[in-house]
Amino acid sequence: MTKQDFAPDPLLAELVRPLIYETTSYERFEQTTTRRFTKTSTPSFPRPRGPLSDTVISALRRSPGSLGETPPIGDIDPLSDDDFGLALYLCYELHYRGAGDVEWEWDPELLRFRAELESAFVNQLREEIGHAIPRFSYEVSTALDELIRGSSGPSLSTYLSESGTLEQLREFCIHRSAYQLKEADPHTFGIPRLTGEAKAAMVEIQYDEYGSGDLTHMHSELFADTMAALDLDPSYGSYVDVLPGVTLATVNLVSMFGLHRRWRAALVGHLAVFEMTSVEPMGRYSRALARFDIGPEGRRFYDVHVDVDALHAVIARDRMVVGLLSAEPELGPDVLFGAAAVLMLEQRFVDYLLDAWTVGHSSLVT
Image (cartoon, rainbow, N blue to C red; front, side):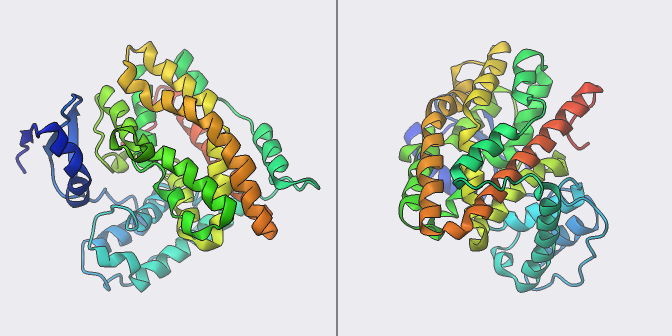
């Protein structure tokens, strides 16, 4: 399709942008006060990485109800395998803005296949972190602090702020785009599954994530600005084709927690860790961007998190976690499971990127 750019009236552009993103994908190629877009096409499918993702992609190209026979999962690592990660990611994307007929979202056979993938995913998570979850006699919020303090490994934000290259910084943002361009949406699924103080606390956090109702302040929009400042395509889903399984696993984790009422407490633990570990890394990422003369607009996503996440950390720990466990104390182990899972997968992600860069390779799928 021939690309045609246009410069809409600024006010009209801000009003219709949500409708635009629901109907077609756009590539933002120039960051100006009157955002300009290049029309590409409706959301496209990534390349299959193997039999699991090929099964999902082939089905989504057809009419709902035609999944057919599905392949066995096999002897793979569900937390890092590219084929597995993409298959599960595409199943979850149907609940966001994924390609394919919308009737696939609740197709019974696709949900059955997704459940098989989720079972393997959870089993591997339990295998990896079962020993890491603290079993202390004191309250879960204190155990959460101990879990975070006990996490170790190299720091990606320190590396990028001190010695990373511009191309590595761009790769990092490509990886993060799978989550950041829909930031807050997975956690928002949890709001109707909570009650009382836990619900109120999550709503307060999410309200900030969505820019307090201002489109231009939404964190997903701010990250799109960062991508544009780095000459990257900030349109939703534009880089799924090059994301490895370790990256997709970090997104699949929060989607799984958000889409299952059974995992509501794990979602709370996940969000709590996000907020409680954010401030210092976000400051370092902002300094990394400044090293390459990225201006205030391109750094705003990270600077905003430095400002608000210190408060969010207190809300998450002392109101959301404590509020949940005051109402449902039996969910304490699930809170810690969610916290341990995100810490473990994030460290695997960091190790993967640094290992690739240490030997001079790209961390993206080629």
